[in-house]
Amino acid sequence: VLYLRARQQLQRASVDALTSPPPSAIGNESSAYDALRRACQSGDATGSYQALQQWCRQYWNITVLPGFEQLESIGACAELIEQALGLQRHLYSDREGTAWDGATLLHAIDRQRDLGRQQDAGEPGLPPLYG
Image 1: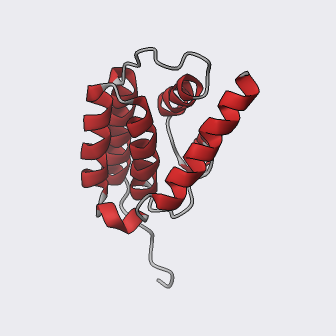
Image 2: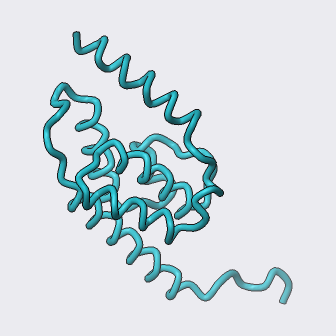
């Protein structure tokens, strides 16, 4: 039974992936963040999962998002990875229909954005190639 339920969810996810808009359709990181914030605040786990994927693509400017387990390789903080994996576990577990609280995921996203702004402010840029 669990196998069949997981298989159905994966099939739905693959259909959603095929019908979801391309990364450029949302526009920018700020728009993607707003969509993610709304989904998290409404407790919509499925919408939050899709919005998180879109936000990650925009935030790191990538077209193919690695699995949430590999987010560390592109610079994600541990808290974001943990919350993303927790959301994934919630969606693909047998606890379908239980409430999901997006506040902790949203907090992790805010932390990642703050870390990114701090890094951007601290980096003077690349040194010139030829001096």
